Amino acid sequence: MKRKSKTLINLKMSVIISNISESLPAFLAENQYTKIHVIVDEKTQRHCYPIVKPLLPKHQVTKIKSGEANKNLSTCEAIWAGLTNQSLDRHSLVINIGGGVIGDMGGFCAATYKRGIDFIQIPTTLLSQVDASVGGKLGIDFNGFKNHIGVFKIPNAVLIDPVFLKTLPFNELRSGFAEIIKHCLIRDAAKWETIRKIDFEEQNFADLIAHSVAIKEEVVAIDPTEKGLRKILNFGHTIGHAIETFYLGKPKLHLLHGEAIAAGMICEAYISFKRGILDQKSLERIEEFIFAVYGKATIKETEIEEIIALTAQDKKNKGKEIRFSLLEGIGNCIYDVSVSANEMKESLLYYIG
Image 1 (cartoon, rainbow, N blue to C red):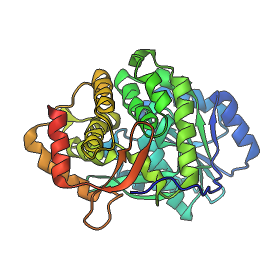
Image 2 (cartoon, rainbow, N blue to C red):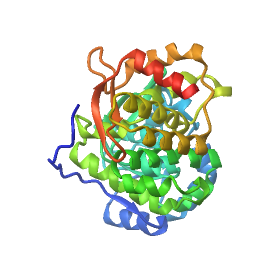
Image 3 (spheres, rainbow, N blue to C red):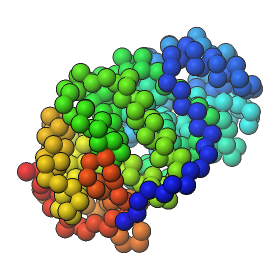
Image 4 (tube, rainbow, N blue to C red):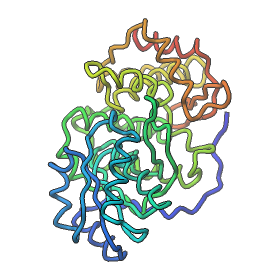
């Protein structure tokens, strides 16, 4: 079990929370690009691209299909074909307008096209604004495993404008809130005490976006390639990703990322409690708040073994050890904790109730 290192690494990471009508023109004025290519999906093309289009010089657009199911090599091929057909050179810019799928995949394609060209993220979902767009993790799903193929590459800028949250349906906004909860639980006990006493609809999202970005920037600066401390950002994600992956191909039962991570946080808080590093009152408060916001995912006891099997592909693992990040009290998280299949099963049974 490892704890925080104090060695800082200087990253050229520019995250700007501002009106997009100011931040995007300012970025473009400071950089000279031969061509600009925009990546959207059908949803962001309809709701978000019209906000950005008037701010851009001449550019091309590639539209992909939305959704985690399309975050794969086939879609990458379509993106790479678009960049190639438009003859983008290494002095060009890719602009990703969308949520975590577009940010992960568009950034991955830009980072690998001609061995890497500049790209910026304009995250349009709460999930991508507080988590996915910050930190330079890029990648795609492969053979059903989330983010199985990817690279670390810091974007040239992340331009965050809360105005895009107005385009989101309720469930997408709520999905992003799970990462805000996580940031509070692993790094800021006082903020956790604040948010848990406020109904979801009454949360101050502009403030929470800035809070989450600051936490993630601090952690990533210390450990940019997830060799140590950055693993705490995966609290709730070992079981959460397994749940999300299990239901990915089941449309009627499909869970959004944040919905699966919410379930994962309860399970992993329970494991923390059973390990004796999280007190019962804290576990009960976590459980009460998350269930109040998300309800309970419909997980059947007969599905538990298959869900647990999926944790074998978690990127924190070493050898045959399934490694977790667990809460050592509210506001502090430890990592590289080996957890057994029996412990995972017990936690999922606890969640099911």
